[in-house]
Amino acid sequence: MALNYRFAFDDLRSLAFGGIGAAYAAIGARTDVVGRLFMVQNLTDQTLMFSLDGTTDHFPLPANGFLLIDLDANKTIQGGKLELMAGATFYVRHIGVAPTIGTVYVSLGFGR
Image (cartoon, rainbow, N blue to C red):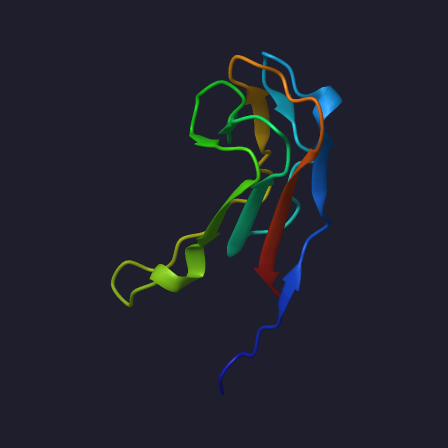
């Protein structure tokens, strides 16, 4: 008998432009679920740097840019599947010029 999972979204995480400085700041709370898909949106007016550990630069996003990663799409019988661990926190900082408008968002999808 096959198990059925339903796709759901975790609570939206966000950080307004005023909270984005030269040092990494957390974007909302840490995750409580194992993520299968996540999208990071930079809806500010500046290029920003993002991190998953608050120390290491992982990826930049230009103003009004986004990154969408479907971790579940790359599963294999031999290798298993990729997941974003529960307890992960997304971080952001500005690169050079601080944003003056907008917000960054993190959307996390999971199976239940």
